[in-house]
Amino acid sequence: MQTHDWRAEALARGVDLNRLPRHIAIIMDGNGRWARNRGLPRLVGHANGHSTVRRMVHGCAELGIEVLTLYTFSTENWRRPQEEVNGLMRLLERSAREELPVMARNGVRLRFSGRLHELSPELQAILHRAEQLTAHNQRITLHLAINYGGRAELVDAMRAIARKVQAGVLQPDEIDEATIQAHLYQPDLPEPDLLIRTAGEQRTSNFLLWQTAYTELYITPVLWPDFTMHDLLDALWDYQRRQRKFGGVLEPAR
Image (spheres, rainbow, N blue to C red):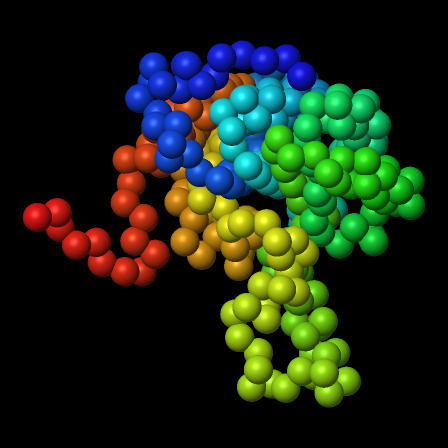
């Protein structure tokens, strides 16, 4: 993994390295617009977006971010033209095969969330192998949401809970927030502290609906293929200027 002294650069930009978010989630928007602005096919935009993913993983690992979650392919993305969907699936397979050895060598733990059983058997096998091969890595967790929807995740959690109630293992009055959390796709990951959305759209698009209840949002007009570590440092600087109350009230300093 190539290194850069992003910690020194963060300090120079006024980012407090002792108050970094544990978990950053990103809605990677703008690949299609990036390509259209250049008169190129949309898949070229997606390919260039993959290069940004590589930069973000390396940079976040250098900074010491624990978890990076990327909205890779949503349950709604199947509605796109079939040629684009097929191309995206091929890009996912190729990227997973090519990047896995590098990730494994450099301490990246890979995790995947979504209705993975609906993906092709070939892609499912690649993702399963990637999780197994990197399970003990600890430098950073790269969590990819593939065929993921926040509503679908909650439906799947409710179905699992309902089956336990039906079997008599769980009583309805015993269901609480902790019960729901335990039945999400990745219940052990911390909730995102910061959610970044590129390309300027101001919505969360069915992403991590449960987990982002108190997540700080940062929206940038920068298209995903153009997003750099300098843009990430801007987001971190902005994040650290906020006061997170989690529904409470901050007492004024005396």
